[in-house]
Length: 263
Image 1 (cartoon, rainbow, N blue to C red):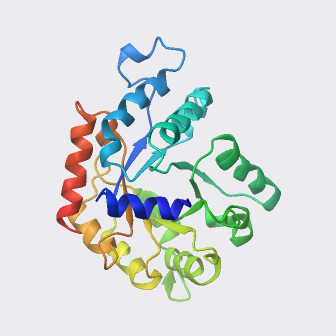
Image 2 (cartoon, rainbow, N blue to C red):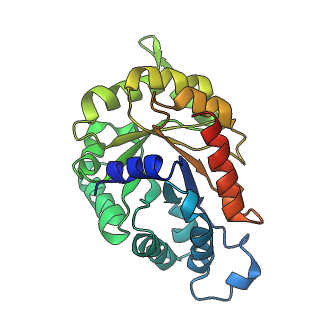
């Protein structure tokens, strides 16, 4: 089953648009995990078991593992999801983007080494750097478009030929890059007006939408602006707001229920 098929099945059968971001900071996870040889995996395992009912995707951010030399914990995490919750796809948040030969190695990293179902990519170097990812027809390629951070305005809002740069990315994704129908766009919940503007030109291409929770994105505004006519079309991510909650399962359920109020 392709990434897109898996996501749509979770949207419809489990009635959820929630993506749980698995971004465990070794310095912030409870001390009971730190003495383990696989501390991040052990922490993640508990989070996954508590939240799987409410998740349409999981999204580990690669830097939290590679930055502390715990790549094995990332491998174990993705294997655990696939083996125990095979209907839930995994997005590797790596934001890769480089020339073709290097991109081919990043493809192997995401899909062969880590066995992710989708990966985030940076389009700044152009379409040829995305093509090795796009060629993987059953995998998702999630392109940065209008990100949730405040500094996004520095480049993404630059006006070129009368339109902001992020709209040029959205147009190319829709008209040139999506031949295999495996593209998604990253558009932050912190910018609902931009969400609506991009949705108006890209049809039903899904959004990966960060910025809910710790970054202050408004659920009602984001869902209203970004959903497709059938009430889906969004993978709405929360990381810190779920994984560091006193009860992660309860936090994931509450976010799912809040999102569903506006679908």
